[in-house]
Image (cartoon, rainbow, N blue to C red; front, side, top):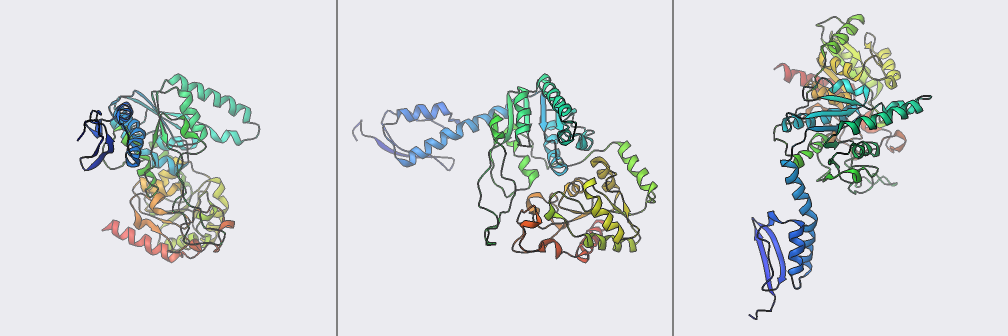
Length: 451
């Protein structure tokens, strides 16, 4: 073969294609696919006389992926001393983030680890042994009349507080423009968050095409927030539970492989307050308790009032105390359920998220919709049943507890519609779930626990 004649090279290393190209005899080759850097690939590309389409694609992929591989290696060996975790709300999302906190503490045992969170959710995590401090973001003050200027001044003070803290690692699990602003203003040298949204096909079409239904509402970081991050978490798939998705950050930082720890740690004072509240409402200490939490944010995720009332009546007949809980926006629903189930104790609007956690911990079983209270019950390891319809329990159900989900197997579910006006089937996924179905599932779960 003439020395100037290019030769065809097909290389594999550890079962993977390394290169397919036409190389000059004296072209310099990288020796290890694992050791390729962006500079190595570009230098090598310049030494290649001519190469075909496959080689160009190979080189393009290597150039794009080399910084990601190098960043992973760099971060996994790096040490951070001041860390801010950003996940202000909602309650269920906060619970999903607790395993990240636990693994951060295991990875950086001597670091200061703070959590930026709303005041209403702060008590749920404040007493966690892995957490150093909470940084309060009073987001709701922006919507209060007469409080906007005060809220704006408080927001500016918060930005100053974050800047003065001199964090060296920011992990933004929220992925919106405000959380990205917190990350940027911190001045941290490493800012991690999810990558831009992945594309997927539309939901049910105008003709209600049941073959074109999405399985997921979340697609990635929103509102351009990914621009603020120095390192983006690649969205590997949408077919994964939110907790496992949050833990993808561990691939960058080198988390351990231990199972996720969702445990909520409550203060003794919160537990005592809930016991006192129950006793004031005629529920003595030690009496078996069933907690019903009928509220949720989406209209479509609400199970029927009669369904919850039927469950309440059944357990009242069996001698349980039954308590209704929720936020102020759920007061009307809880009042109607209590009226249809005489003897049920209505505590709706009278508990904080931390109180709700203590109430569920006190209970024998909890019955919920797809809501934050469901994730609280799962994190506490309590027997529970949740009614699902428009959302996918594989992605946002009680973590690793499929037996706790009751749902109808309908071709239109899940649809991820938020408003009832969007549903062309009269909310069939929730209306067809009867109280008898839920009671039967509760009994099965409680029997398994007792055995």
